[in-house]
Length: 247
Image 1 (cartoon, one colour):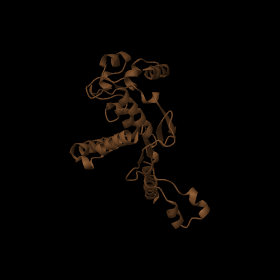
Image 2 (cartoon, rainbow, N blue to C red; image 1 turned 45 degrees about the horizontal axis):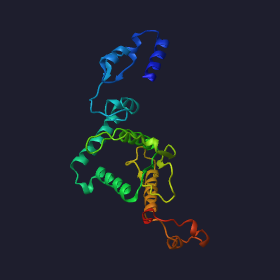
Image 3 (tube, one colour; image 1 turned 120 degrees about the vertical axis):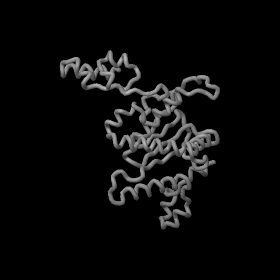
């Protein structure tokens, strides 16, 4: 609301007419009275249902700014993707159900490996802000969660107990005190097909994603490095342990 009021004041200073608010502002809200009080025409109010979540419910009317940024056609394509995943989750057997498998992996890493973090690593410039989106989404869910008996749990914002390492393209949530041997599961993301085809660039990027996942999963032994013709003095520097072999 502070941002909205600042934008309103700037508009009035520039155009000098209260009617400009109704002409140049739209609202995403469920409170028609306050929208009208602000000066916005309620005919230009995008409402949503009471079961829609907060600021990060991008596929609802709350995603209006996203739709304006990318255009209606691309926004509808995104909604179609959401719908396709909803149908996949609703109809696919659990052994091939992607959301179910991701959820079970989280349980596996948390309960059996003691992992308290999850790294999200996009191999695509177009996904550079995806980790930040997931961080906020996770924090919102954590803060508002209830237990199985529908009782409120003590609110715990993940930012209270987790730091962040990485850059705009990759984010790894880390606990405040993290010994080097702790498990930190990673998820590597890519886009398919390439949104901007350019020769073999996307194929090479995909190859790097697969190679990185293989390296993390299986590592490379000294014998494998030697078999590649590597000089003996470099063998120790090109040998690394598989993350899955630590326990």
